[in-house]
Structure formats: C-alpha cells, structure tokens
Image: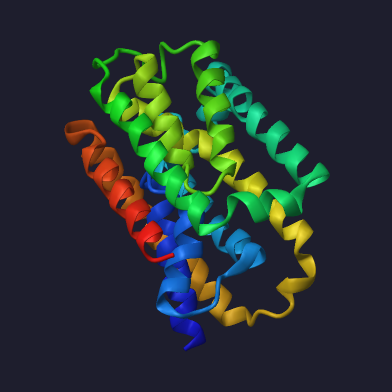
Length: 266
C-alpha cells in the first residue's frame, strides 16, 4: 500500500506542477479525499526534485547544447547572459517573499492559507486571471527578444504561487500572455523560471522538516521520484503543445469545478 501511495503522490506532483492547476492544492486535497495521509512538507519537498529533473531533461538540448562537430560540451544556456539573468531576476521576488514567510510567520501562514476554503477560493479567483490572459491578444515576445522588465514582472506574480491554489505555472504563463508573450514561449519561460524556484522551495522544506526524512523508507521514495519524473515529462510535453494551439480554456473550467467541489464538500 505504501508503494501505491508514493506512486500516487508522484503522479499528482508531476502532472499538477506544470499543468496550471496547483500541485500544492492537489497534494493536500486528493489524498484527503481518497482517505490516505497528506504527504506533508518533507515528502512533498523530496518528490519535487523529480519535477526539477524532468524540466532539465526535457529542455536538455536548450540547456546543454553541444557545439557542432566538437566533443566539448558547451553550456550555451548558462552562457546566454540575457536568459540566465532573466531567470535569476525573475526568482528574486519568490525568494524574498518565501524567505520572509518562513522566517517570521510560517505557522500562521500555513493555518490561514492551506485550509480547504482558502484553496477553493484561490483556485476560482485564479481561473478569472487565467481567463483574462486567455482573452488577451496574441503577443510577439519570446525568449530571444524579451527584456528584463518582462522577466521581473513574471517573477513578481510567481511569488504568489507560495499560496496554495495559485499554481506557479498558471500565474507565470498567464502573466506572460497578458504582457504580450507568444504562447509557447510563455510556457517555456515559465518552466525554465521554475528550475531554481522549485529547487529552492524543496531545499527549504527539507531543511525545516529534516527530522521527518528518516521516517521514510528508501525504496518508496525512489518510486515516488520516478513517478514524479515521468509524469512531469508528460505534463510538460502536453502543456507546451496544448497551450500553443488551444490556450488555457480547459484549465480555467477545471479550476472552477475543482474549487466548487471543494466548497460543496466542506
């Protein structure tokens, strides 16, 4: 049973981290609905690394490009100072806000904003923001011609993803679309922006709940990581292709239904 639970945790994390429906909300609500334990902060942090690895693997050709006709690996992605600076700049707001919450009022934050009522209301509110983004005019900003203000603006809204129900990918993709980004590039930048954001969030949670890690068996954790990695790859591939041609309508409808169902079952 433990193995099946870890597979489930991995599937929830993987699919909902990149599809704009909020992984934190689903990791809390779905297990409770099915009558199994909430994975908790430490386990959630560990399996998040599966999502990080999936992004790196999926965009490996962009991140670790090989120089043509050379055996020497050239880290073109990291040498692209503009894109690297944009990603680092875009992560400043979430680092400052997340760090402040963890330092000054971690427990009150969890009590207020991790409740089912809060998750439901935020999910519905976020669907309205996504609707506005989906209705916005098609833009022309992409990874090559964007400026630092574009990335910082997306980074500011990414900070709201600390609140369960917002969805990091949902709020960043929506902000990018409203700001005039091309759909596919909006999703790509959201995923790349998430590499440090998800990694740092996972590391912080691990530090704060380090004592809980020893209570987990090694093999189920590995299974959970693999489950997260594979489902994250599927989610990234699906979202890039779907959003490019269909927009966010499907996820808007889902978020409204998700929020209403939570409220009806309180």
